[in-house]
Image 1 (cartoon, rainbow, N blue to C red):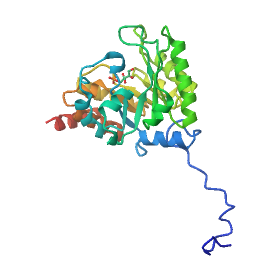
Image 2 (cartoon, rainbow, N blue to C red; image 1 turned 120 degrees about the vertical axis):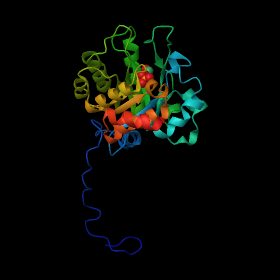
Image 3 (cartoon, rainbow, N blue to C red; image 1 turned 30 degrees about the vertical axis):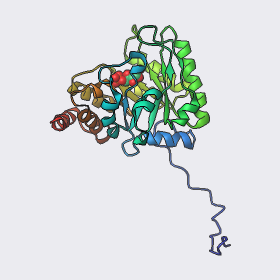
Image 4 (cartoon, protein in one colour; image 1 turned 180 degrees about the vertical axis):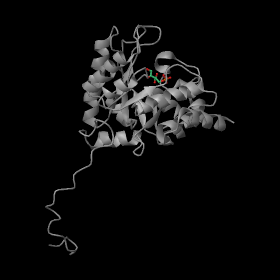
Length: 290
Ligand code: 5RP
């Protein structure tokens, strides 16, 4: 047998079954198609299996949050150190250079501010705009146990339905309402619900017995940093989360409100990607801060 140019082709060239594809490196995502896996691979480092996401979407409910008053000035220097930018489309288009070449987890819910009931949200970004922005994921907030739990779960389901049509992963963001206890039972429920509805990864908070939360969630979990802590404590939180099975962080205030945000995000990377201890990362932070 020969090809169009006359080169010999082995007899089995057309008939052999292709080599069995390896299991995908991220937990629970082997059953997805090429587009979803490609986008997940852009966000999660293949060597470490982890990610450092930079969250600066706070303005969508809080207005000009401390450290984010001028996102063009404060966020831009951090972009090179982040694996993923998590923000609104308004922040992206107005403040982030389009040639940054970073994957984006686009905040896609809206409908409430700090001045009102936070759980009363809807989907506020059309999937076509997410695709136009070349988003790597859509981030959708859920409020388990809150007044508008039902609406928020519906938002998540709808985003996932749209997302799988376009090969676009959805990040389920488990918000914690005023009266919710941040324990393994509650966060375990919220993360599992997100995964069962079909999101490809979940964002939640670190808590005691966090390994129960990660074990009960069949897809990767990233943790939010929460309110600003002293830098050494934030690094400890990050270390504990990775040790207990988190696949990364989606951190905001503990990076952009740190005394030296650029040093802080690099120290976080050292834990998430290179297995540094919290003490080693803090030493690195202090050196870089100088
Ligand atoms: C709000 C969010 C924020 O992105 C999230 O809270 C991460 O920021 P921080 O580390 O400051 O908590 O999803 O719902």
